[in-house]
Image (cartoon, rainbow, N blue to C red; front, side, top):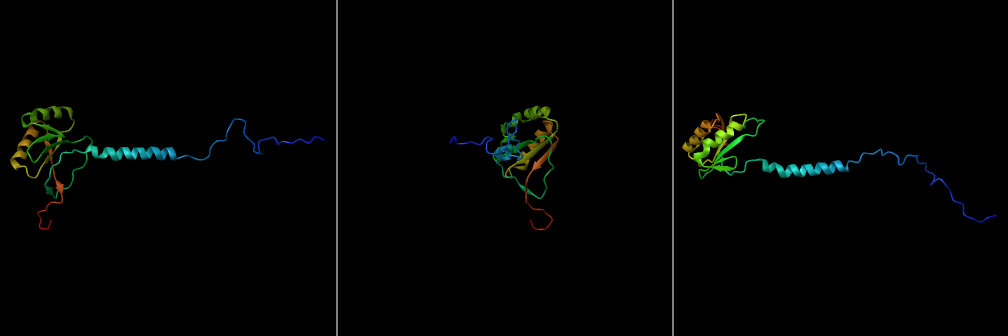
Length: 156
């Protein structure tokens, strides 16, 4: 009689398929969550950069906001010092009509938003509105802040 050790064959009693590992029956969502968090961070950083950043003190009115459009609106700003800016580019008044005509030739719509500081005289605002009209923009929206007086005797 031989006193040897007998080993069990078969790898621990589990049967394995001939082609490799068995298919996984669970969905691993960790990569999806990682991608969504990265996209969230990108949008949180990029969203504030999409607004026009010229600081002006807009007058307050009781008017409601205009509906959104497909094309990004052109914004012309008159600062408290009287300088005129197309989007964020400062433009001398003598070149304003020529630049507006060039911009109007590239755009589909004729809508423009005029932002003017509350300290700017009315005559200056009207001069810029005339330049906008001469530059090819006949649909001019005046931008204000909400919360102003309603002038109907209800308080505010």
